[in-house]
Amino acid sequence: MAFKKYRLNPRVIDDLKKRSYIGNVFYLLILYIVLYTGDYYDRHPDFSNQMTFFIAGISLFRIFHLPIAKWMEPKFIKFNDTVFIFSVLLTSFLWGIFFAKFMLQGGDANTNLLMVMCTIGLSSGAAVAFYPDLRVSVIFSFFMLLPAIFVMVLHSMDMALTISFILMFLYLCFMAFRGNREYWSALENEYLLEQKSKDMEKISRIDGLTGLYNRRYFDEVYAFEWNRSIRKQQPISIILADIDHFKKINDQFGHLAGDEYLKDVSRLFKQIFKRKIDIIARYGGEEFIVLMPGESDLNANEMAENIRKKLEIYMLEHEGRTIQATMSLGVASCTPQKDQEPQELISKADGALYQSKSDGRNRISIGR
Image 1 (cartoon, rainbow, N blue to C red):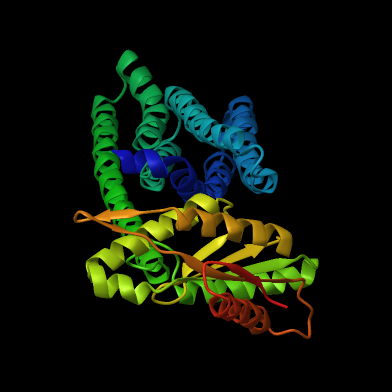
Image 2: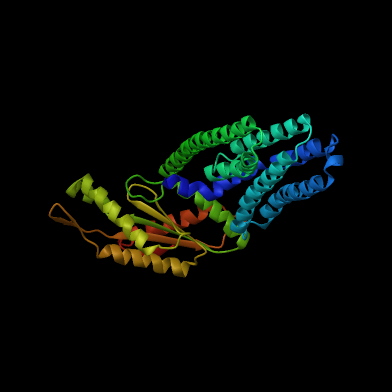
């Protein structure tokens, strides 16, 4: 499903790493318990040394690889994820090969029973740990149990135990499938809740009519950008705009026509102010505000003039009638200082807007 494709790499790999990390310690403990606590090592020193070298080596590699890979992120993240999956499957393959050799060697019943119990335990634990990726979970069990099953069938050894291994492998596959399905179901629910939360957050900051940011969100971003401009000593500009005689549009053409006109004005703003860091918001009924971080008054004036000219020639056809209006704007810019209040710049822009209206509207004034 599309959800799996979207979440697989970043989330699932991370879960696999967390789930499998502690298992590396158990490989080392089981090696010590099986090979070195009884007399097995004295009877099979070469085999014990070989198994210790390979299993302890891959386990220690995995233990140290994870923190090193985290330190190397994000530049080598794909490479390290591949190494992680490969090392996991190599661990099961090596253990499966040595387990098959162990069963061929024979020995006392207690040591054999201990090795069988530990191998089944490791397979079961791994099947659970690797639920997030069904392929890894099944392949891990395959590599760990199938070599022993193969040699036991080939040499006609203890068929009851062989059949038990086969049934255990099938059971682990079934559990892996069911666990994987439950994991993804839970993860998808989590994802849907996360998306719903994001949608609610987006709704809370977007004006429902125009699709622009609302005043509350503008105030939050403005406070942040003001403080950043103080730190970096960069200019910041505000454009405050008001549609001239907008009440007449509502009175003459109706509120639905007025709403359509506001939507079209909003689209004009988006066409003019294309920088991602510019914030365009509906500040009041027919009032708009633009925050331009890093822009001087010269550029802000030019952009304000562009939107004024654009609206001056724009005409909305509504139910066979033409709606046309103009816009008055006030522009204010400064490089904020620590002793200044953010509201000062907005007040300057508001004063400039008032001046534009007083001078006859459809014009731009500069706040001083």
